[in-house]
Length: 193
Image 1 (cartoon, one colour):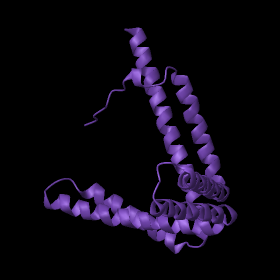
Image 2 (tube, rainbow, N blue to C red):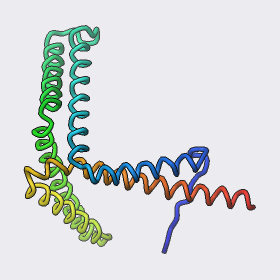
Image 3 (tube, rainbow, N blue to C red):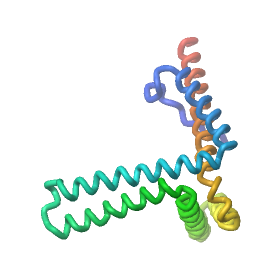
Image 4 (cartoon, helix red, strand yellow):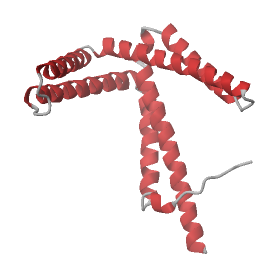
C-alpha cells in the first residue's frame, strides 16, 4: 500500500524552479564534497571552532557587562563557561585535525548509543506485538557505523565528518528535487483542471 501525503502548495516556495535549482546545486555540491571529504571535514571543524569562539566572546561580554547577572557567583560561572568556550574555539581553530579526532570519536559514541537505544526500543516493541524489525536493523546499522568509525581511527577522523555532511547535502538536494517535481506536477494538474 502506497500512502502518499499530499503536498500543500501554499506551504512551498512560489517557484518550483527555484526549489529544483537549489536541489540540483545541493546534489552537485554534495558529490563534490564526497570527493573532498578531508577539506570539508577541516572546514567544518574550523567553522565549529569559530562558532565556539564567537559564542564564548558573547558570553564573556554578557558575564562582564550584562545587567542580568548581578551576583558574583553568577558572573564567575558565566565567565568560566565563556573562557572554556573561547579556549575550546581557539584549540579547534588552530588544531583542526585533533579537534576532528575528538568530534569523530564523539560522533562514533552517538552512533553507538543510538544503536543500543534503538535495539532496546525494538525489543520493547516486540514484547508489545508491534512492528520492530526495521528498528533493529537501523540500530544494528548505527552500531556498525560506530564500529567502522572507531576501527578506522585515527584516519577516519580525517574524512568522516566531511563525508556525512556531503551525504546530507545529496539527500537534502534529492528531497528538494523530488518536492519541486511534485509541485510542478500539482501545478500542471491544477492548470489542466
